[in-house]
Image 1: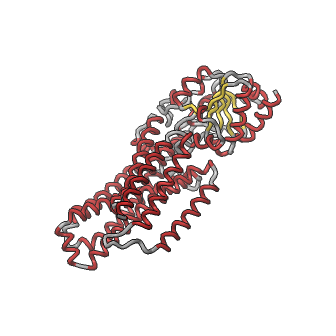
Image 2: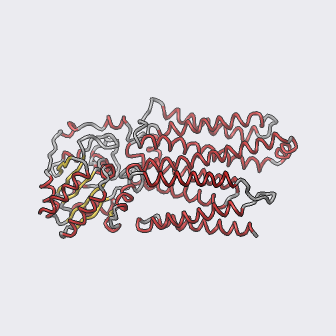
Image 3: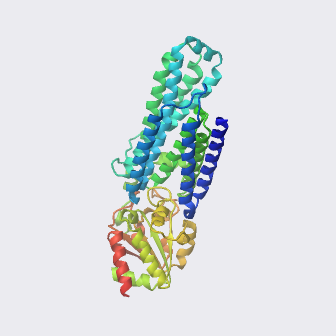
Length: 489
């Protein structure tokens, strides 16, 4: 009866995951979706602790270790989430995603050691497995899959975390792609040899452990090397891809433990992450192969991107008072938020400026590029924190339709996502990436700290266009002064 109750709870929890994921598709319901899914996960964890019984009918007994881990992890996660700034949110996502990958890999390690220990304890058990090794071969496939995918996700996420916080720099060497492919091939060759050829031999026990940990080492190395050369505007895609890896690895753990809720959760995360990766690649007009092999956004790309002199090196500035006057008397204003807005923590004062202009009869909306910031949906989360109405957020396609009828575009800390070189310069590393076509507006005001290139490391020819004016300074300080200037008009 208890097993039926546990299965029912797992089914209920799986439903909450689906409902939560559905609610995450819109900013207005995202918070509720998180709460629903979290409630389902809490229910599944408690049900597993108190209702699960093993094959011998014995319940879990190591409650001190279980609740100790839950308490320590819960406290650490809560403090980390509350303390993190919006600018560091992508780093936290990468870090937490890496922990999920490590957990999945450790499950595979634990299950392999458990099975190996069982074989060593009894030659009869070993002979029984050899007679009917199809079941064990299937289990080995799942163990290796969880190990490889989880290890790649962990190592890659740690490198992504380091690159996002500036501690790890883009690194590439000649022939690195060939080295990466060689390591990947070695991983599959060793795993396939162990599972399909060595299993039927009496030497399996002696060779299995060294080969297994060789695969672990190679997988960690591959995770590091395949993320190291990727940088710039491709980081949101990489984070999304690694997130899908973690989901698939968790699903492997669900197979191993015959745990339906773990399997469902892993499949949902893997599928959602994969779809998001595809959508983001489409938004950048790039294939996933180009993202992983092209090293787009790295230092090399930056070197190829040219400099201000390639565009004439002439730009014009606008004063705060002139910018405030233009915004105040405009009929329609579109605000383009970027990472610079997040760095300055200026989303609240930006919302204040938006409300002030709206009260004066100006039609104000926000243009959101799908890969703006350092993670998928970064700008949406940033503006939601400031209570910006979701109805004011325009996706890229909608915004591009409205730029031609816009009087003023205010670009706040965005760079690569408004660079016309993506449309006009075939030699540019970002050529072909859809952008926010702010140059179509009657006037563009760009707020930046300096003329330095953006995260992709390439110069932005928009800054030298005749309809563009630069407004230098920290986004928060500039917006505060703009608010003051508008109040005085």
